Length: 237
Image 1 (cartoon, helix red, strand yellow):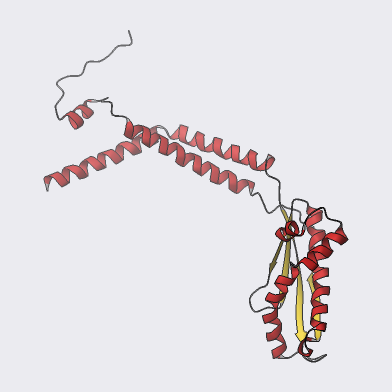
Image 2: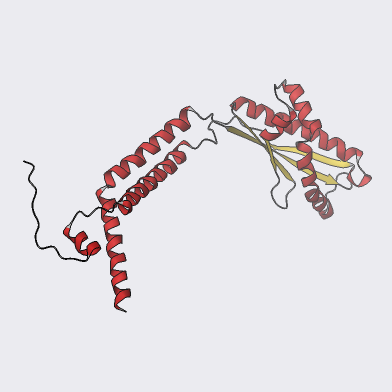
């Protein structure tokens, strides 16, 4: 029982000492965090190219009869949106977009720039294009939407009779992005600053734990188990 109490006291004293050491170095720790944050801010601003996104959306509806929209039309259209997601990034669409915009890139490179999303239980296709060039992001998004709408319309007209009536409408045209979506300079700076503080604290704690020198009379009693009789003051002279 006494041994457990003694161990608990030692752990408590160690934690207090560690906390005291961290407080004694708090200025240095904060300074390291600030330096890390500034380096990340400058690096994100100067070394990483900003990426812009432009989004457009299409509404696709398959009707079984011309002029009338039924519940089954809505259900079938919702189920087919996943097929249209694949169609938007198909080779036939991307090749036509590259040809008409005279883009200096391959199909694979263009596909990586395109992200197609369909909100749950909707017949809406959201087409988002990412690029380091603002104008290029908008132009590609608009062209992908136009080419995809034509391709979807042709497929619906040439498919089985149940899908011979189809509507593909543009909901929103792509806008010229005014702000980059990445890098997030402020977020990178904050994260780097926090990491710098954590690393500085870790260095301080490890250095303290690895230090086995006896510096005070308390250390003599704690580690050697003997009492000090007197202290000899040292003069700078």
